Structure formats: structure tokens, C-alpha cells
Image (cartoon, rainbow, N blue to C red):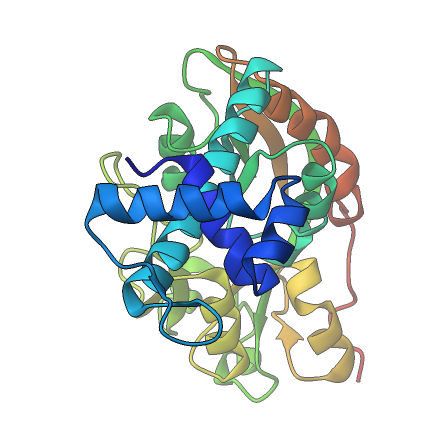
Length: 303
């Protein structure tokens, strides 16, 4: 019968290069390893070692056992580690969903910090508009960072994080800058708006700052929206940290009359099933995101 002990023996022989060296690393006699391998060959009906030469070498079948056996040994170690984590209150996986207004790399510092605490796997999930709250409500996310809606779904706790400024922008030579009232609906409706598709699967999808009768380019991520606007494909709103450098460098220009509007962001989670990783995330996120929760104004024209 193929046991974990036998797989460990085969692994040691392959790594150390000989029965003697493997026996020493396992604190066993070489003869006991030879006996165990011969018994394993008899039980499996396989030739694991070629003994025709000066020194026994693995056959192809033997090497396959070593390769697949290492996968089993690794899986067993991970299973034990996962079981220990769960026993101590740490989830196997925690999913942090965030509105695409944030850049994914804002959350990267959490990866190493969490790894130092536990074996919990961190999953980052970008969501858009109604898809944010749907992911949390349906259990596809454990913690959410998103603009706070007028009505919060039942059973969800929301901790306000602060306000984020966003701006109407377009490239400097876009014709909308020639308009006297560029952000008024009757004017905006003449120019293509760039929107990100709502990620909601079942809830009613939402749109934001795009008019019903306005020409529209719909993209799949906030980064695509930013790139489209920067390449002159339309107008739209973006958070200050997406556009500040481009406004300063003259690559983008704010629309006249487009006062910065504020988005009230919150940290949300379901009140039930509070594991250690979930509690840890809730404590870490406010400080991590504090630099991006800025409400202010960037001058209309720096030229």
C-alpha cells in the first residue's frame, strides 16, 4: 500500500541521491529503506528502481511516483496548516471587494501583512456600481469598499471612511471645452460619455453621470475608462488620484463649471461569520485608504 511514509522515503532518496544519504536524513538505517522500497515494489507490482548498474536509479515509473507523491505531500501539509488556521479562528480565504474607482494596487500592502498573520488566502475582487453591494449581499465578498448607497441592504454594517473628490475631465482639445456650459445635461448629451459596465448579475444595473440619450462608450474597468478618456474617446468623471498628474501635465483638462463632487465611501461587511481575517481587514482598511479619502479641489486650468 502506498503510504505517506513511503512517499517521504522516495522523495528523500531522489533529493539526497542515494539510499545511504536518504537514510541519514530520515534518521533510519539504509537496510530499512531498502526493505521498505522492495516491499512497496512487490505490493504495487512496479519496478521503482533500476538495479542493473553500479548504483540503483529511479525508473520512469519511480520518478512519476516521486513527482506525484510530492504533490500529495504538499497537499497534506497544506491541509494540516489550513485545519490549524481554522481551529484558531482564521478563514481559509477572505474576499475583499472594492469599487473600481480604487486602483487595485492600493490593496497590495495587505497581502504580505496578512501572510505574516496567517495562511488565509486574500482574494481581491473589483466590482462596479450595484455589483459591489450584490457581491456582498450574495456572499461572494466578505468585506466591501464602495460608495454608501441611500439604502443599505439589511444585515450589513457600514463604517464611513470619508469623502473622495471626483472631476469632469476630457483631453484639452476636446470640442466640449468650447461650450459655455459644458456640464449641463443638454450640452453633455451631444458628446460621447465613457462609462464602466455595472458588474451586477441579478440586481438592476446602474449608470452614473451618463445621460440616457447621450452617445456612450461602455468599457469593463475603471482603468479602461481612464485610458479611453485620455485618448480622446469621450468625456467622463474620474477620482482625483486618477487624473491629478494628467491635469498637472496638461494631458487632461477639467470641464468649466464642473465643480468637484464628493463620493461618500464606506467599509461594509455582514454582521454574521466574523472570523479573524475578516476582523483584521476591517481594522486595517481605514488607515490604508486614508490617503485617498480626500475632498478638495484641483484648479480648472493650470496652463
